[in-house]
Length: 456
Image 1 (cartoon, helix red, strand yellow):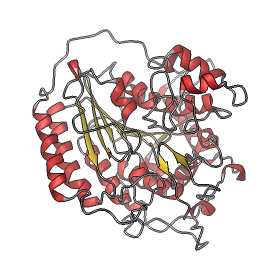
Image 2 (cartoon, rainbow, N blue to C red):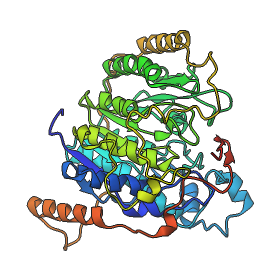
Image 3 (cartoon, helix red, strand yellow):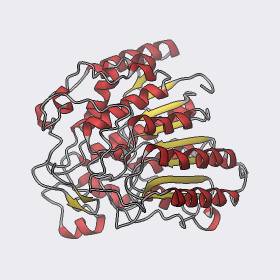
Image 4 (cartoon, rainbow, N blue to C red):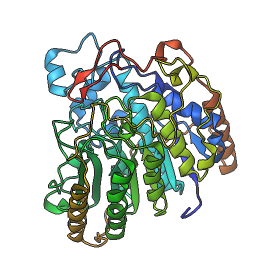
């Protein structure tokens, strides 16, 4: 590792209790499954575990409008008007449910707290698998996302770093983050995603490059459906090497949406868990402070396995996560509905990678197209000023400072002991209610802007 090799892991078990609805593909319960695998694979021993601060309304308003945050804070499912539904875009994709604001406070607070750990406590890596909700806009929800924790974390990092790189591995374009920094050269956004045929959100073309001061600081890599490991890597590696060489960011925010894995219910890519993790490892080796978040991912067992394995990669212990599923309290969630036996998605996942809409057209992701994308991306980066310089600027106050009381330990040693005790209590403290242990199948197909979820 670059400095001390310290990895902070931010987790609040209550995040897994958020419930979008029985027919909704977003299942925050996947966070409890992920955390359980992290514990049972023995990865917690290699992490500094923290229960994150929850974001205050003031912290959320560093990006979002006061009007929107006030609405989320007070919204009740039974009292939301049709006018509010339309104005704030809290439609079927992003419904108002009980506890939605607390859910936002938890996942956004963890990303902001993670950014602060990178800055204040000299951590190399901070992990918040509950974060990565990249579609949320300044005054609206979008695509299952209510507040944009990624933008908030980047704003926090910009208080200390002249340049921050945002990298998005989700199958869906990171439109909310790109939009927030479209005219700003202090943030470069790079998104590898599915594009075309009305795939949500419909943005992220290769020709979208930013504007004004941010021109050339937006880089979009649009792929067709059915993307395989080799196809992805042939573009990702040379492009990200050039991005890091040219832009030289002081910090990286990496969104690891797992809906780019093969077999996802909404995504159309065919990446294996190992290839997804190899991209994470590639970025880790640059030894730049990095905030790592989750994102999309709608087959819970695959998401949990992916993020547990990537946690192992981030702490330098990939061998701890094998194809053998450890004993854990969520074994029922790892069952294959048809076979009714525990099914562990293989790290290489060859059999998992089935294009769910039938045969992949020959024209999709063919070598000539990938060559064109790679060539244009590298040409794009030639326009980028090498490590653009910036003058001094007045640092804004921290978005969220911990509220210390007289009961908190005073010395560093006592604080470390306190945090250690808290982390171990946190890792063992679960709500095992069956209410949130939903199956991977839904009663009806899911129809939305994200596409149709087949029942299979």
